[in-house]
Length: 253
Image 1 (cartoon, rainbow, N blue to C red):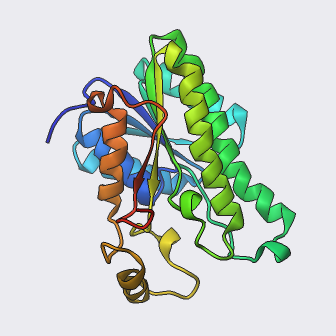
Image 2: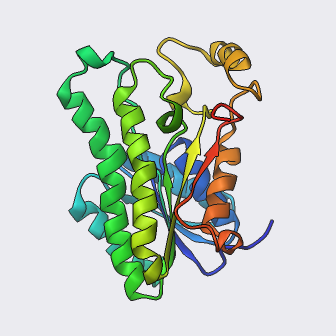
C-alpha cells in the first residue's frame, strides 16, 4: 500500500455507506486523516470505527450538505481538529423514487436536486474558501454515468442532477484552478451498493440484468470506483483539471 495522502486531511461526505464509506477507508489506508460526514450519526460513526479498525485515523461529523451552516461547521471543525483541509470528496447523494416525468412531484424533484446538486455547490463553496486561503487543495465530486446517457426511465431528477454536477465541476475547475484548487468528478456506473438495486430487485436479479446491459457484464465494486476517486485526488493526476472520469464498465463507450 502506498501513502499518497500521508499528512493530508480529507473530508468525505455521504460517508455513512457505499462509495462514501469505501472512500473514507481507502483515503485512510493511504495515510490520510479522514473526516467522515453524513446525516445519520450511527452510520458515520460506524465508518470512523471501521477506519480505526483498519489502523487509520477518522472523525465522524454529522452534517447535512444542503445546509450552508452545516458545511461551514464541517470545514471549521475539520480545520480546528486536524490543522487543515487538503482534499474533499463530495459524495453525498440520493436516488429518489422512480417516477415518469409527467407524474414527478415537484417536491421530489427539488429534494433530489437539493442534495445531489446544491449539496455539491454548497460543499465546494465552503471547501474552496478554506483551500484558496491556505495554498490550494483538491476536490472530487461524485456525478454518475446516468448524467451522460439518461437511459433510466423514471430517474429524471437523479439524471438531471448528476448531469448538472458534471457541468458544475467543469466550470468550478476553471474558476478556481488559478487559486490552486484542482477540481474533477468521477461518474460511476452500477456499483455494488443499495442504490443500484431497482425496487424489489435482489443481488442475483441485478447480476442477471447487468450481465446483458453492461459490456463488462457485472457490477462495479466500491473499491473500483474509489480507486478512480483517489487517483483524481492524488498528485498522479496533477495535470487533470475539470474532467469527469466515467467508470462504468463500458456503458457509455
